[in-house]
Length: 123
Image (cartoon, rainbow, N blue to C red; front, side, top):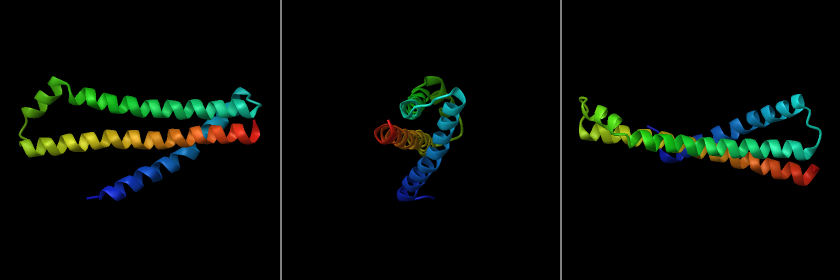
């Protein structure tokens, strides 16, 4: 089982690995669309970073909604799981949702930072 520190490091590494991939995708879209100024690329990075953060927030919100659903709670309570097993499952589901928001926030903040850097250096 992973420790909390290993889990946090994995989230940071995932965010740092995904950021250049998204940055390259934004650059390719900008090149295809015909962006010519640094401001256009900066805006593209900023919008992408903001969208990624919003996606993470919506992901966690969806997790809260499903955990608060009576139908899902009832379906879980009619199985063969004990109270301890249900609590463990609920905790694992919750942590997965928080992992998504942490990773998407890291990616989004780095993308917004890149947008500011691009604008200040080249804009």
